[in-house]
Image (cartoon, rainbow, N blue to C red; front, side):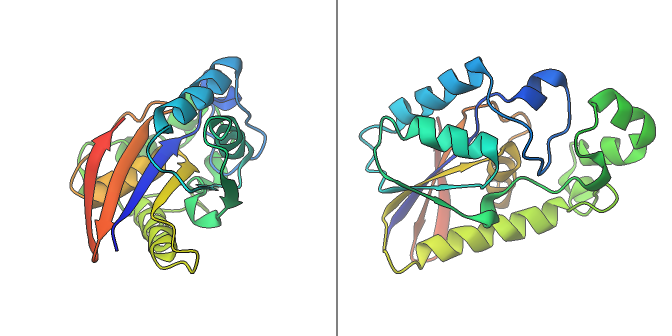
Length: 196
């Protein structure tokens, strides 16, 4: 059965504008711009048949889901598969401090060559490979869920869009707040439809 997924990044957050690495912290919340971006996500999804919003349990993703849902009026369900990458000891650090303390790791993680950064992580953190596997497990769970939804929106994080698109052969290096990745699955075959 054909399924459509609209995976979107949360709106701008307080850590985004402070230049801090978020990871799985729950202290980062949407800014006023982030709230407007979240409302815009909902407007862009009107008429696309969204039946449910699945959200990372982190505040910034939940806030985005709730605001987007003002246009959709569907159930919101949290799912840890779609939580942000665990950045370990770098969580909450300012980028300039990370560049001093973990320069080699930072440079590898931001290398343009996927093979250079797929298995790299900060101490006590999670690799991109692990994130990609977790995200795909989540998508598979929703493909096979008993509710049999056909069109699912997912409120998540930049790494979700980047790793899912990378697995489908498309590299997204700069995922904007409020970006939406539309992918589909049909009889086990996945493809990118568009980036909204």
